[in-house]
Picture 1 (cartoon, each protein chain N blue to C red):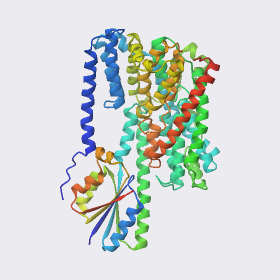
Picture 2: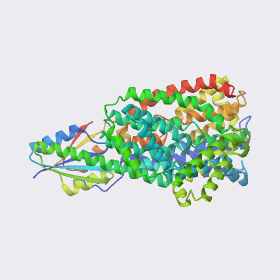
Picture 3: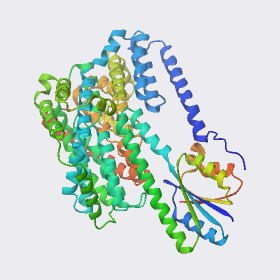
Picture 4: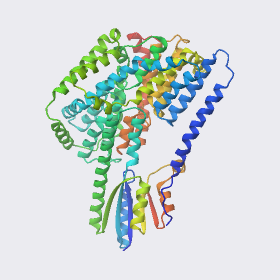
Length: 474
Length: 154
């Protein structure tokens, strides 16, 4: 027998070499663009911004460095190359969008830690999930609804053990049970669809708004965003339910065992605690304030004020918050906003957009459609936050040329960026479902493709016929 | 007594390989060792992706990882229970082991300890390109062991 010494597999060897190769390639691309003579219509600073933009694309797409480290690199490259001053570059971290999402994440930690989210989930599932198909529908709608108010990824992580409990109680076999697939996909697709409805479901919307405000001074309020996204959310939930039932007809006749498991889990939670009630009330007040006073006081100020109130009444514990929030995401935002700002300020975004998409499409509708399609499909392969960070500068660069409302193109590009139904690398909700073993790639690729086509049609129809009614004209 | 090692993991389970292992064990009057590897690498990758891309914090990621491992163990135990029932029905002596870790490493460790005469494992259906790029457990295993390795395609 040849002795096994734990050597690298072919895949590991490939991965070991691909990382330095990609880093080297990014450096080479940077130098090639940096050393080019400045093209007509572009400033020297604009050319350097494009070189940094290309490095950011390569590193964000390939993930050879964590997303936030690439952001830090972006932040230091701008002052080091003289595009922005050091003060300007670091000051972009103070963007309102970053503090809004910080507040939202901290409040979400309180909802999870108090047990309120689990209680709501279990209560709803027990109340509505009375037959196999109704349980699937309940998982779908509940995951979507929770993702309106909390990060969709946190909802997926919270719902995952509950779906597993149901699957285990029904003795469903991973990879073989259609009902198992239906349950996990309803959770996954519910989170994804619900995540586009408000600013709270994902990091994309606050990031896009941060770039929009930083570069154009314009913004979209909480209610308008939700109004614009809601028809797509409702239609896509119906489509998802039909697709799930069609592709994975249930082999399960009774879900009594699952209901009994859910009941046991619910009983373990005990009576509703004061902390749960208080966090629930605070969250409702915060959402009301975002809708009613968001423009007047600012979304971030309201979020941070709620966090302060939560700490005053000891509803949050800093240690728990530290454990629950992924702080790296704020670095990612800082870099993305800095990139968007520099690209716009130097005219690089406008120039680059004109030389790329601007040469292919010649009408505002064509441009919007191109951004929607690009966003919908790019988001499958790369992090949806990275899609927004990379495409926002280009979208804003072209919007002015085509006379498109910058707010409209921001929403048209950002909302579909959340709809990554197919591949596990697109969104953690899909990755989590995939990790259960119940769902395989074929299921998500096939079903997700059907959803994607419907999403494209529904979203474009919404832009054409519904958005003008709420004040967003093409 | 001859030993037959049946390798099963969360992503590599095929009823045909179980049937084949039981039939060969009876035919060769051997002992069947069922080795279930809890492939934690997979769960680790998912959780690493979640935290690395800044999606959720350390604690929720850790809880998710624990849920995944609990599920893998539950599935492993129920699958081993099923194989044990089948073995009992056909009167085949069987020993079962569950280990968590990287599948190739754990398999090599058990091969060195048990020194089986035959290894049976299932292989997931993948393209030749995928095997070329990412390598294959079955071919890596065949390279490192002296005994016969039978691969059952899923």
